[in-house]
Image (cartoon, rainbow, N blue to C red; front, top):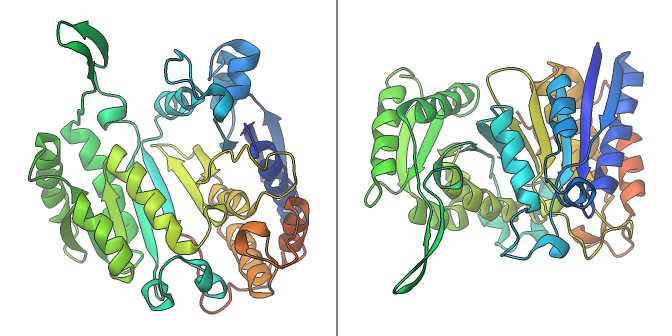
Length: 368
């Protein structure tokens, strides 16, 4: 296969972890006889510094031309002024909207060798295997009107949560399609006891559920779902929810794995092009120190191979290599290592285990 991959390393540790993911993709290309070409573009704070905008036109054009996009992280204290009119996160929201990437997939499957790192008791983490699907281009983050104004009573701020039936239907249907290949349980998360958008969400979820008689549908209010993720996380299979609820719940679920540095994500739309990124932030406090864990970014590259390029064996090869490296005690500082590996050393440890014949070890699983 010949494929063009756009890299947007972003800010903080982004360039370091994306570099390791690129080397891993190059290694996969060598082993499986693929030709991967890469272009690199500015997004986020670095783009604001260079061009005054978080998503420059040439970055968007480069991403449109690519078969897939691999992102590092955006943001940092340098651009955190709440009064700023241009913020790094605007670039991320804009590229999702411009490319029609409406579905964010975040697999949460704690590795058995790292169970002790979870803030929960080991029995709470055992058997956890969740796919969280978050609607990505609607809801409170994009609704209008939006803004601030002065009133006789003081300053007033408005954000509007808006969802259409079509937006809800396509994300819920995707959740059911994914559940048919897993344990056939969909948990639809809303706040239907309070919000009109959630009442519409629940209505549409029920309608879509009738199309999949082999999949069980359950409804969960977002506050009780947050509690169940801590008390009974292993009971979930596929969770689907709207944009803001998903933003919060996915970060909570990520803690189950013991480190944000381990978890990947995929943002998908109607076509094959997707945007892939680790769920962690830019971690400016360790940027440039060679301490960042590249595992989440490397696993995001595996999702890229699977969902945008259709290379399942190659994706599983990376996932098996990661699992084997962790089984062998190859850890970065965030994983509690006494003698932690550097960012590059962790990448090397994973690449050394890229054996096309290797299977994902028992107790681990492919992140599909």
